[in-house]
Amino acid sequence: MNYFYANAANEPVGPISEEQLHELYRNRTITLDTFVVVEEGSEWKAYRSITKIPIPPPTPAVVPIPTPPVVAAQNQPSMATQKCPFCAEFISSDAKKCKHCGETIDVALRAAEEAKRGNSNQPMVFMNAGGGAAALAGNGQGQIIGIKSRMVAALLAIFLGGIGAHKFYLGRTLWGLIYLVFCWTGIPAILGILEGITYLLSSDRSFALKYG
Ligand SMILES: [Zn+2]
Image (cartoon, rainbow, N blue to C red; front, side, top):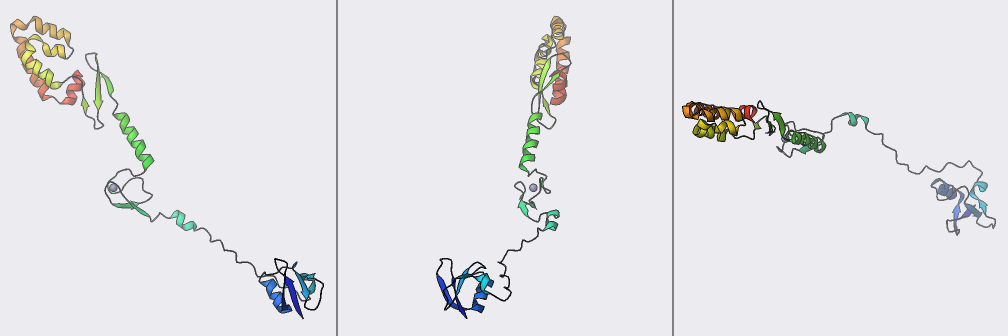
């Protein structure tokens, strides 16, 4: 016995054998509700009503099998590498600091470090022994440069020390007046030369800490 079946456009297709009809059901061309009719008949019936044999289930559509996430890989260090922009050595792409040159690769971390470094460049205000405030600028390596020039103080002490010029320059006004009062003795001039040499021999840092 042959059949026609109604396709999606509701047009009769056939004739085909009953076995071919079942095959169409198995490959999902037709469903249990598809209308079929016997070749010589005129009564359209649902496919489910004409079959006497147990209808085999349609073959399942090809469902992609979800691949299980690779858990192990998450715990392993990434094998991806990047080139250090500072020394051009290859390092892990997860690296925040270069293991070769020690530079910080991570952008956020680097910005934070530079912000911290920037803060240390702010001038630090010290109260020196004379009571005057001296702004001392640190450049991050612990070097301190004072406002008063060590060289100017030394030259004043050596050439104009007899009238206490270096004392006035360094803010030691009382001492400057004493030098000035005793300038006629020549002693302040000798002291000035000695002090000038002392200034020349001291470091910028110790000079700045002492005189600002
Ligand atoms: Zn590096």
